[in-house]
Image 1 (tube, rainbow, N blue to C red):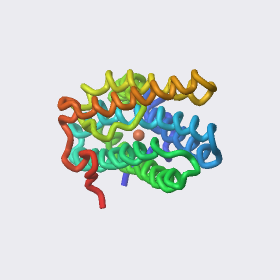
Image 2: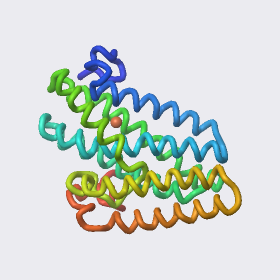
Image 3: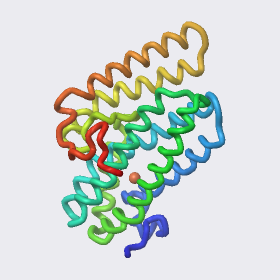
Length: 241
Ligand SMILES: [Fe+2]
């Protein structure tokens, strides 16, 4: 059984630029944000949820578009392991899309949130204990750094919101990246304005954000963006029991 990357030092993982260290750092930040969200209410909770979305969705998007294709190539068990993680990502995308339509305190929010947290934790365990240590056994430090740089470059410009209809694999997700990133990041700014300002400015920002959400929802269904998917990760039918 390979050693989990959670129990290895930065040096063992290939140094600060290695994809393994970058993953470990994001997973630790995810854990911090989940605890902070659990302890918060109202506007503070919404702001922290947005911080978490801006961490996990670009993180997963970049995994699916640049890391998992490499893992499928270099590891015999790659197709099986990456599919399992893609199914977890798909479920998180679907549940988070529902969460976006709730308000803290309305009951549905409190029902969805623990389910999302459980899936996020399962996803981290699958990556840190199974997939990434096996990758570490197969590739050298230089390749880990190369994958780290590639992943970081995509992560910085990836969509920041859930998109359950878009393919979890290239070419669909690669085509979707730019337009959805622009819409998501505009919505992040508009939602922040809507939360922090009052009166007309807040209302207009809220309405514009809804328009961008509608546009993103329609765009997701455009055929090139749904191509490449494994049938088990299509929207509405995650293959898990
Ligand atoms: Fe990850």
